Structures are given as structure tokens and as C-alpha cells.
Length: 231
Image (cartoon, rainbow, N blue to C red; front, side, top):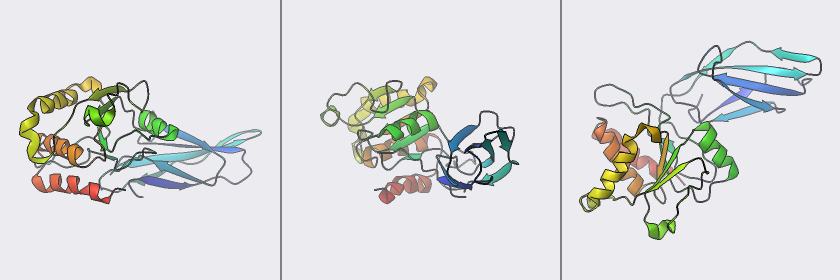
């Protein structure tokens, strides 16, 4: 299975009125997610990388429901890209192994491009699938138009703090302090942070965060260069 999505074939035959696909990381399906469909194929996005998942299908019939056996699949051990419709260059900063062998937790910090053109589907993905609570906008007010609310939704806290890039960090000491204070407050998580295209300023902040967490330089370089594969 790929990190980005799992394709689950329908387990039951066509006589059912609809199907409920349940999936999660717990074999008992505690806190599981579900998708209701009439289609023969279901695409599931935004799964965690390097993780075991369990799934089953409930066929909804006119005279009752029928539940399939429980099945299992594992996602690939690679970087976790995520999907937010209308937004590009999006990925999880988690999953990277530090120099002392620890793994940065997934699902807490997401990086990407601006969310100005996020669609209604993207808003659901951001707030439901990824549970984003804070939109940290690293652009200048000249780029944001002095925005005070996040395009992701009213439930998302919006913070605007102009960020540096490359060797300009020394000229943005106060900004960097303010940015790091956002990440230092656990009430802000999960956080989605971005600049315009999610490369230079976003990549510079990622380098600072990963360096503080003990990630070696090669991994930091690789994270930065991943943006070259985005749209």
C-alpha cells in the first residue's frame, strides 16, 4: 500500500443498497473512521505512514446489515504526504527519524503552500481528517492583505508572522521567536504552517524545527528539497 492512499475493493456483492467501509489502527475499531458508498472501490487519503491498519465492510441490505471479516494492510515507510484539495506542496513534518533514533510524531505539524484557494472538500480534509487547529501564515501583510481569519474555517486559529528565509534569519530574530512560541504551545496543535508556495520560508522554519529536534543535516536537506516535486 502507498502512504498516500489505500484502495479497498468492495467485499460484498452488488445486491446491497450501500456499503460502510470502516478503517482504523485499532483491531477493535475504537475511534475508527468510516466511509459510506455505493461504489465498488473506495479511495482513502491522509493515512499515517509506516502504520498497520484494519478494515471491514458493512453491507446495508433492505432486511438488515452484513459485516465482513476484518482485514489488515500496512502503509509504506516513507514520508507522509497529505491531501488538502485546493492546496499544494502539503506534507506531514512527522515520521522523520532523529540522530538518536527517535521518530517525530505524525499528525501534529503540517507544512505546505497558502490556503487561499482551498475548496470546501479541502476544508473538510483539513479540519476533519487532519484536525488542524492553527493556521500559521508566514507571509508578509503585503501578501495576506492584513487577513485576520483562516480560509480553512472559523474553528481554526489564525496567526500571521512574517518569516525569514536562508541567511536572513539574523534580521528576523523577533519574528523567529514569535513563530517558535506558536510551536511551543501544545494548545495550538495540530498546526498547519505555510508561506506562499511552501518552499523557502516554510522550508527555513522546517529546518529550524528539525534541527531543534535532533534531525541530521542530510534529512533536513531532503525535507527541503521535497518541495521541488510539488506543483
